[in-house]
Length: 128
Image 1 (cartoon, rainbow, N blue to C red):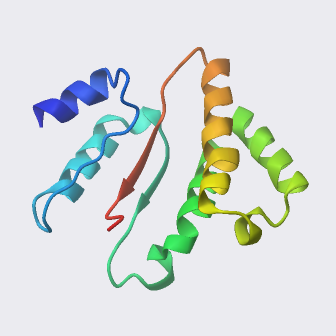
Image 2 (image 1 turned 90 degrees about the vertical axis):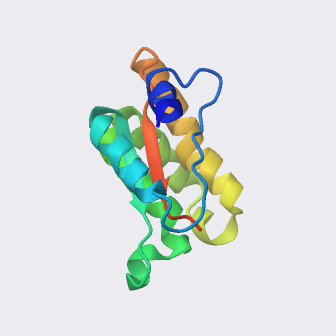
């Protein structure tokens, strides 16, 4: 947990914290702890849950995160709206990487600059 605490304070050159381990090793508990401690920095989250039906389908991951980012970051919302207007079929005809770049990464980077470099978190749990 000490490494996680260090990453929360100063992610440094590593913008991604990837927790891996066997089922039942506490990854979800750590994700929940991070979410609670960093509540003011979270711009989106997605917690997969086995047996939750449609709510935990991978196809909903990017649209759900995009929606949450648009709600929490007005500057990002404008960029997202422009992308959706210019590429109305982005969810159905573009690769996931393209969707991720255009609808999440770029808008968040622009919004962070407008907020004087404040760093935001996206938490995704149980992606496996």
